[in-house]
Length: 101
Image (cartoon, rainbow, N blue to C red; front, side, top):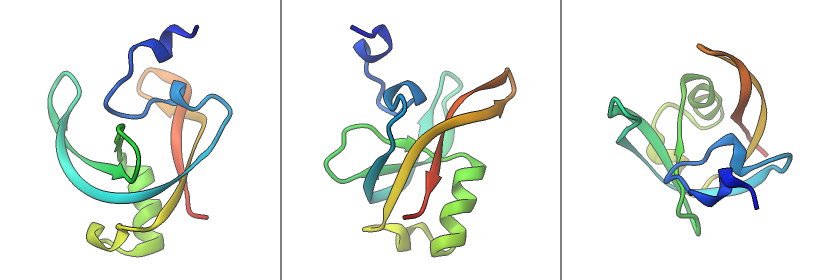
């Protein structure tokens, strides 16, 4: 048993993926309060998935480059989520990135 998978988050974390990548169909993009500071951030929701994906600036730019700035145009599109090493304010660690198939 992996303790990181025992307590599911309402949002995807890098530990949810391991070395796998996942193709997901976007159902909706909306703003939600996230984190302990309850910041308002864009969150993607997917068909047939309970967990959402909090968009950061880097992933948002990938999406906007592919399909435009209006998030309503992203509905029904397929993306690939995968993990890779990323720079964070706390150093380097695993993070989730978006790829357009």
